[in-house]
Length: 137
Image 1 (cartoon, helix red, strand yellow):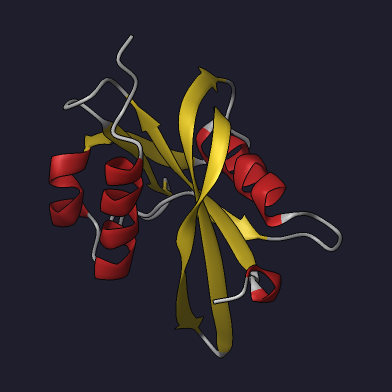
Image 2 (cartoon, rainbow, N blue to C red):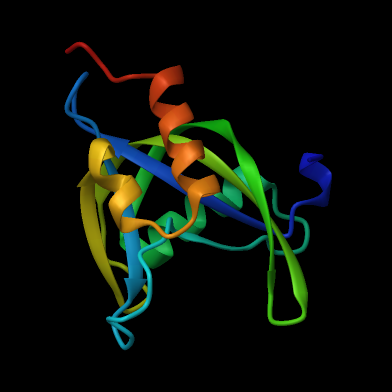
C-alpha cells in the first residue's frame, strides 16, 4: 500500500524492556463491549501521516509517543467507506491528559492476540516488536 493513499493513521505504542514489551490499546468508555484497538484516526488535510499518528495517540490515549517508525498498513471497510490506515511503531514518551473518553490498557505483547479481533493488526504489532524488541537500558 502506498503511504500517499492513507486515510487514517495510528500508533503502535510500546513500552518496557526486552522480553517485557507492552502495547497500548484503547476502546470507547461508553461502549465497554467494543473491541480493543490501537489508537488511530483521520489524517487531516495537509497533515503528514506520521504527525497524525502521534496526534491520535495523544488525543485518544493521553500518551505522547516518540521515535515513530513506519510499521505497515491495514485496509478495511467501515460502513460504506474504505479505510486505509497506516501505523507507526513508537516508544512511550509521557502521559498527558486524554482528550477523548477512552478506556486504556497496556497489554503484554504476548497477550495481544487474545484481546484484538483483527489478525492483521496483531501481525503488525508482532512485526514492530521483532523489528525493535526494546531498549536494553
